[in-house]
Amino acid sequence: MTRPDRKAMRQMYRWMANRGLEPIKEMVGRGEVEPEMAITMLAHSTGNFSGESNTPDYKRFKENSGRIYANETFFDLSYNMSPHIFIPYKFAPPSRNDAGMLFKLYQHLSGKEYGSPEELHEIMRDLLQGKRVLELGCGPGFNLKVLKDLGANVSGVEKRGELLGGIPEVDVKHGDAQRLDDVFGDGKFDLIYSNDFFCLGPVLDHDESKRIVYATGEHTQTGGMGIHQIVYEKMNPMLYEFGQWIQNRKMGSSHEAWEEWFDGLSDAEQEDLMYTNRCSLDPQDLVRAGFRVAEYSAENGQLNIVANKKG
Image (cartoon, rainbow, N blue to C red; front, side):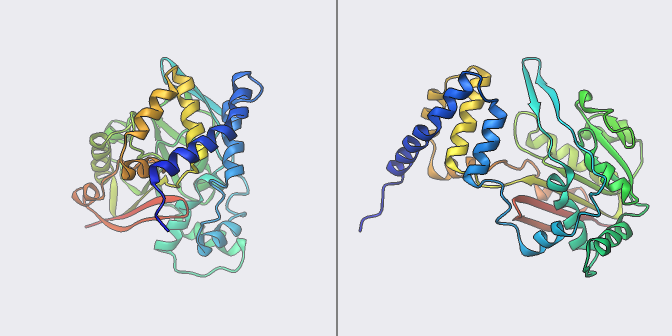
């Protein structure tokens, strides 16, 4: 049996996807369903972001994290990506969006077993009690509130001023993570972390990420830790196709031109683009900034980078 031609297979899949998506696109075009809602429904129907690929240890951690997130806060917001792009953004609650960071903290620092949500809550309180914690690109500070409830002294830095002030219990500063000195002086932290912050794109490139990494090196205590994660899941081709159609529609650009550009890429380039994010953080920059990289892995739908500050 001859091996199927990959280009022919992609063309057939695209034809099938477009046939399946055509009614949804028509509904979006008529204003009968919001684009964001359509994407969410399609993501669920295609099995994307279901958590089925999560490791058993992470599933167990999340199942026992209810006490940690008992008082979590979240709400919907809108913000300006640029003077011409206004995006309604649905935040996920910290229990779904940020549990991965606490899991990595538990994995690297605890080593203790737990048999109930109450025991896990106490373990995380012991790890965070009195620790000075900074989140990069924290938005309103949803996860900072969770960490504060666990006993941490929390701070956040956020460049988009319209996201600040929604949660009065947390200290969120308006500023640029490339210039932490301007925001925190010579203050140092026991933990600096980020979630979906180091994503390669128009907002953050490799040079900017390098400057941020060096800034975190200057502001992390000796023996302190950095945990940086970005969503890294392979998208169902139908969901990817529809997401691009939505983006082109918002930008007023031609979807046909995008399809022609995509078809001209190599198989490896197309495969890379099927993942939800690309990382702008180079682990070698962490080493140059005085860290030892303890973990660089892709699991539980995230790219995980854990680093310890050397003496």
